[in-house]
Length: 343
Ligand code: SF4
Ligand code: ZN
Image (tube, rainbow, N blue to C red; front, side, top):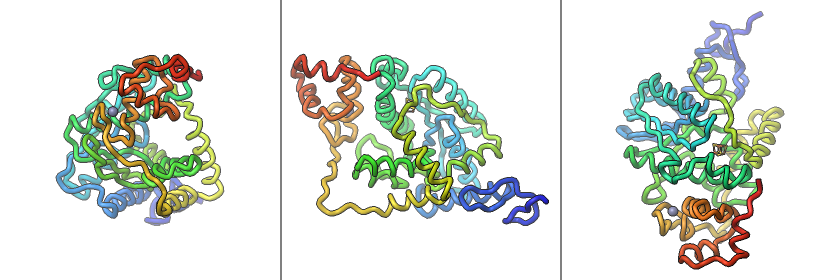
């Protein structure tokens, strides 16, 4: 016998919601999913009427669902937002070039302006070239640091008030786990925040409207809505540590679906003992971007790339950063240390 939707009790249920285990028809699922995102936006006061909001768009399922939902909710609830798409081209042949084609189609489908900023224009390096120099072990460190700044730079060019990104509940829970495993208190504190205020000049406030949306539901939403998204993984995605955290979380979710929300809530409720030293935010003396060191991570990585010393930004070499900043020559041993790459 067909199961009826537990919400409308009229149509046939086509899915069981991973988050609540309710059997729902397509329309009731869409409504429930969209309303939850709306509630997240309203209760955390993510936006103000009249703001210009850049949606970080990669062409993947999360950001495509985010762009779609932001457009729907902006119209349904009259948020009064000016929306646009903001994409970063990391310069990864066979991956980003294809996914950007998807973003360009999304731009047409959702009739939103699109700005693409590329690593090549901002840093003079594509990820393809970076991987050739640094290998496949630390490439995501470069990519992550560069992306963060690239989004800010794109947002500044477009004069947006806020950036929203497609980070979902699984991403946040994974990050909580990773920061617990690494004992990174500063990041642990920041990673569960649904929005960040501007931390300084050149840094645009960010928020995560899908913070409480399960990845499985995002996939279902995109599938039933027939959204046009790109589902191939990055060709340089070893990122082993996050992969382990992800597998661990998926195992937990299989025995207890609320595990994702439980981990997020745990992260949100952790408090840091008084007296624990936190990094002090300043600005990079070279590019002016926020940094807790004399040089921001992006400038250090770039300096390493440009000098053929790729290990400069990986691991702890603060003493050497200072040396480089004051243009002192490195010893042979220091050079060797910074050159060695694990391929
Ligand atoms: Fe960049 Fe790594 Fe993500 Fe690929 S997997 S896009 S290299 S951060
Ligand atoms: Zn800098």
